[in-house]
Image (cartoon, rainbow, N blue to C red):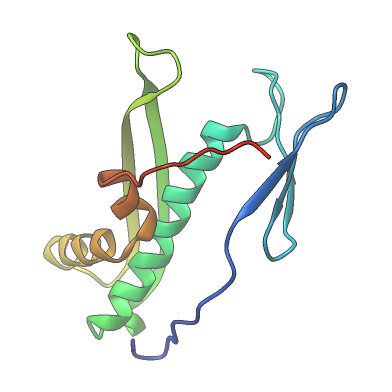
Length: 141
């Protein structure tokens, strides 16, 4: 257990619904809702944005946990994680590379920031999953 933070399990999963003329409505297993956008200029999240958002959110949470585990929580002010990526040119439906930039504010030396980020990478479920992709099984009902 981390100092000041408890790890609790939560129900996970998501369902997407799309009708013939409607947009994609997403719902999490816990009832969270988001509408996907498909137009290139439309504001909002598309599936690739959600992938990047998952990584950036997970890394941000993991940075805060790492600072706490290292005993530096009182020094921690905030973190900003920006994730972007590049689609593979040879394979239409795949992201070839992703980049994460982590900006940690607080009373930290560059060495402290490096240690926090290294620990955060080891804690982050999303980055760990993307490094070793899971088997995906798609079935029809």
